[in-house]
Image (cartoon, rainbow, N blue to C red; front, side, top):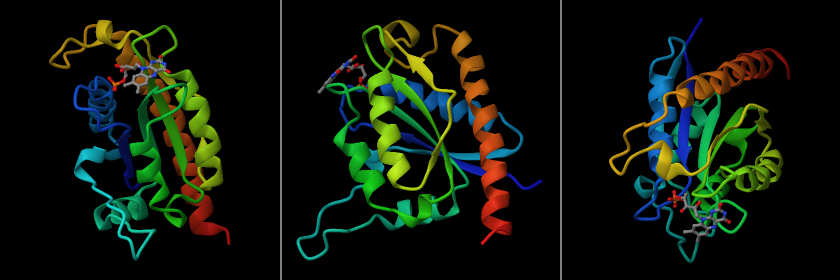
Length: 184
Ligand SMILES: Cc1cc2nc3c(=O)[nH]c(=O)nc-3n(C[C@H](O)[C@H](O)[C@H](O)COP(=O)(O)O)c2cc1C
């Protein structure tokens, strides 16, 4: 069976962001899965300036990567009970490349809820884009107690939680890949 290409998308460009530690861990877990190829998509590396003449300006690197993707894993912090504008801008820059592809979520917060409201808000958005949301979210509440300042993981049980999310995402990715290749 061919490898699945699953980009991991970090949600924010905030300079002191802690969610990047969670995104790096989600990416690292993918790199240890035999049937997955992954890349970390950091919005800092994917500038999407609005060109006055082209309100739909894209980032060619992101276009290529979404075209090739079999699935996505979005890692988002929660900002005012939703997800950051940087993530929305990145997601909005494409459309047809998402259709009939699954997406898994991890939420990150410094409070009790681990970004659940950001994930809930995202479900509406990805549905409109033609993606299929999985039900195996990973939550990182009190993120400062899960990673130290350098991003070192302090609680190993998150690895198993991420692996569980990938198991479902991979099942969905194979199923939808078959559908895209065999059904009109
Ligand atoms: C603009 C802004 C709004 C935030 N709103 C919320 C919120 O609604 N709920 C919450 O649990 N945490 C909120 N937080 C705190 C984040 O959970 C915290 O910054 C955490 O470290 C994850 O975000 P980060 O990747 O930016 O560090 C907010 C942070 C910022 C910068």
